[in-house]
Image (cartoon, rainbow, N blue to C red; front, side):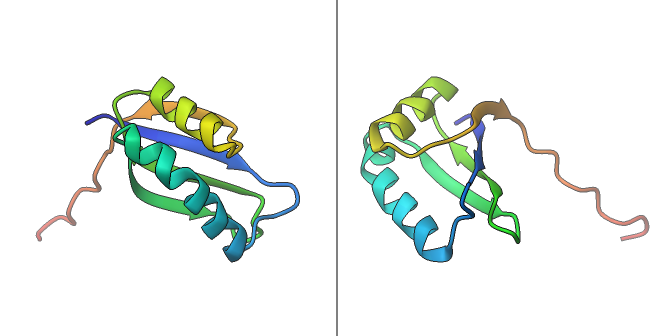
Length: 89
């Protein structure tokens, strides 16, 4: 399944409760579209963030977010580059 990134900007900054509410709104829309969350990262000041998702394609992710009325900045396909093990390991 392709890896996709969703970027966010929050004004006012998002709180932990706000993030949970956002995830709850998105869950039903993501579930029916075969979208699986991998990781969410939020800036310490709560103004920016991104999610890594597995999904059929970027437009499917956009549709889910729009249906759930969860704002986002952009959605784009990506690939993961794993760090190399240290030399001699």
